[in-house]
Image 1: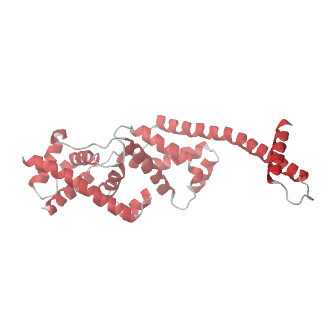
Image 2: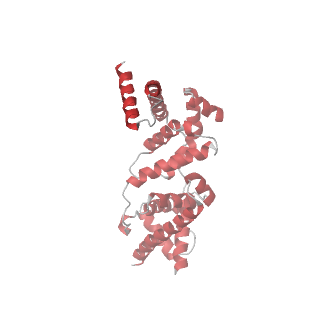
Image 3: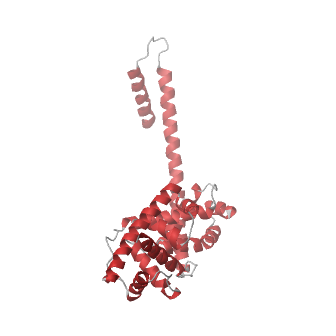
Length: 188
Length: 101
């Protein structure tokens, strides 16, 4: 890959195509995980790749290319998300029937939810995450939905470990508060 | 009470994490073409701008060198305390001269 990067810097279009093919699974995955509500996936992917290509001369090789690209992708998404207004609250009436069932299951039992509820759970989490700021949303997605470690989050975001831990703690506290409201609603 | 709440959020996360993400891992051909076209356009812009910038820097360097050389040539060494204002005036005159030439 370093040779390919060098060729892209010299303006080799074949190498640019090769690099794009190599990086597209990573970029697509990151953009899908952190897609702003009002931006299309294609527009975000394009914005990320254009940044990657135009900043390629700044890539020193000190970190793996994938980490460097991840950071650009994540920061591009955060920048876009931070332009969107954070939703003030979530109401029980905002939930779909499947999401209501997830809340009912959470309220009525201490057991893990069934695999059939995973999609609805994911949609419910997405709605809850919309109540958080962009960095909080990112840290929860990376740590709790993608199962990444604090070290991995540090590599992707560039934030230091203490910041990540504090941010995750506060974000979970906010989410708990909102989830608690939904659970209380369910009981009444 | 707090443990139950914690547990609900943890269970929700665990369940949500099981949802399979969209597996299509390829950028569509039209999007690839758009990305490469944007890269090409940016590169062309840079390539057109750089020679212009180089010429401007070269011209500025020549003018500055001339101004400095002219200032030193006109300073009277025998003068005990060279007047700073006069030196600056000389420099400005030199720059003006270089421009008019």
